[in-house]
Length: 383
Image 1: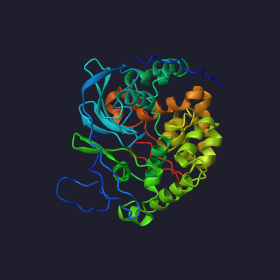
Image 2: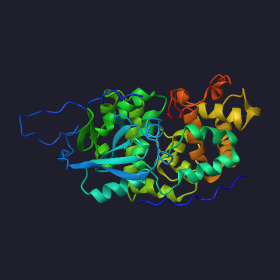
Image 3: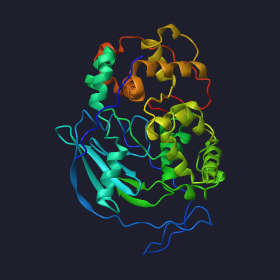
Image 4: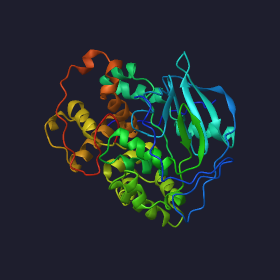
């Protein structure tokens, strides 16, 4: 079994999504505008903030080898960042509204549209991008142990795993269950619109993600009317459970970063609507569980082609999901989730143009059906 040492720390220095669903209509008055009215009559109104201007692009000291925006943001890790220009993506991190874009040489720069603190915004961005982990050093180790990974890495540089806020990540993946990327994005936009408006960029409105207290004021019926279907009860149920935690739900989720992977998965699966697949996504993308492996039909196909060929043609079951995860960890070590992310992206039809034809000569096997009801439909993302 391959053991991967933690990477050395780095020096720190599809088209635009459909428009968001609007929350229940609010009463509008003539200027000057009043604070946004809450969906719930007993909830205090949310005030709008006037964005501060920071009109300059600043180098982030990250090359395209360390961060490729098109291979990181539109691949299903998060549904809150929007493409707002050529090789440019915009989103919020806490109370900060920022854009990222590639310069002509491939390096990444950032632009602060709104923030209470410019220094805090940069620190939050670096944390969100997981920059303490050197992608180049990780991939060097993966490539030494897997010739196919080494070949793919030449064409798909910079596919980075994000470190999201756990509450935000959890709610997004509750929306993803048995869903497609268009509907997931609309649902996440609706939830986001319940938070404080931070500004508009490229025709999109951006909001700070709402707190658990704010989400607790939204009823299951309101979410159903907004098109969430059966997921509405999972979201309201999960918010209720988190609100009942002694130290608060947000702190409870953050505490899962200190647990072993299986303990974190078990804790997440205690929440309404969260099964092993969704829990693995949350663990990998927000809880520092770098060897978590979200197993869906794409990952199953990858595993049966290259890691477990003896299982080709078998029906994917929860037991086999565990075996697939173990195979990835055995091959790639404690950062197996990062390796799996690259292999997953390489298997997406949207990335076919980036790869030489010989990568696509092997005939795709028919997708297996996932028996775990918490696994999500496959349409080019993790959901």
